[in-house]
Length: 238
Ligand code: HPA
Image: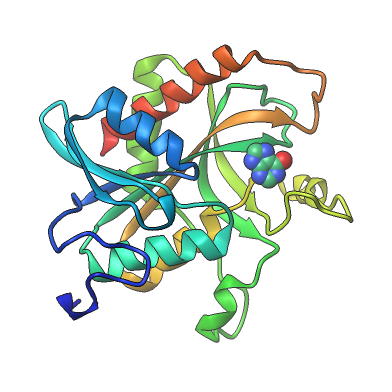
């Protein structure tokens, strides 16, 4: 789209500041961690509202990382502006999820092939039915290949993008009767924006907590190294 939209209400970067692929954690500090740990020549290209975005190089390939914030409205804003106004082609979300599937344990990886939601994001498209937000097949395939190569434990399938972290009805587990693996809060909006704008998206999550095994405790150090693996998967496929 045209550069007259740049800068956007939420991103101050200039045209061309973002690489074709943006890795998106929810947390700005994690975006900074990825940039400083993995990228060479990382340059801060956005810091509006503390949603920091960096562009640098990973193994010689230009790549960006920017936070999405929490929840579908926030992910909806940032992914839309990156796709529509900054010519970004791929967004790979790296986040945490609550596992609902009994085969998943803390630190495992979930690749979100589809994202169910209790939210209303897709209502804007006025479709005569229920839209099914899905990841880009190529990105799913590459993530699976990277996980296999790195020897990581993962599952591929449907996730739930919930609008509630604190859910009065504790309704997330209902989705397990349809085989939904885990709950997070952003992917359905990301997949909708990618579909609407003809772009590609994927969500890779690390299990931070489990509804099935609430007693499973991981130290923050253990979790950090698991998150690091997920970031490496995302960077490998970028
Ligand atoms: N709910 C929603 N999002 C999450 C959770 C959860 O239990 N755990 C990590 N992200």
